[in-house]
Length: 102
Image 1 (cartoon, rainbow, N blue to C red):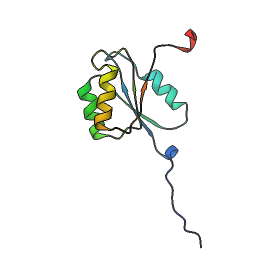
Image 2: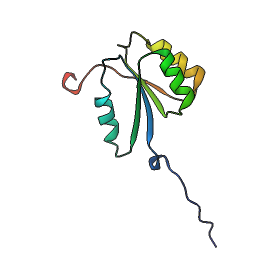
Image 3: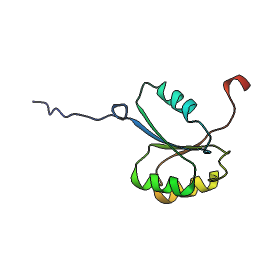
Image 4: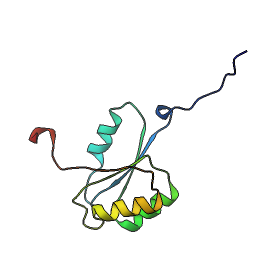
């Protein structure tokens, strides 16, 4: 008799992502791109080191995205904060290049 177990695969749960962006930035384009995978996405946006550290302490994101335009939380700060609070979470640096410019 086979042992039947329920397996939770990565696609069975929402993708938890954090976007570190300037206050007036919009998470909509990133959210739209992530949603194209067909997977539910939970996207939190923060704009300061303190907000990022607090969020990382209370949630377990799958990935952190950042842009070079964030003056309140530069890329180096994002990397060091993620490394100290959740060292296994990848950080992806987004550029401002759109498909029309390529």
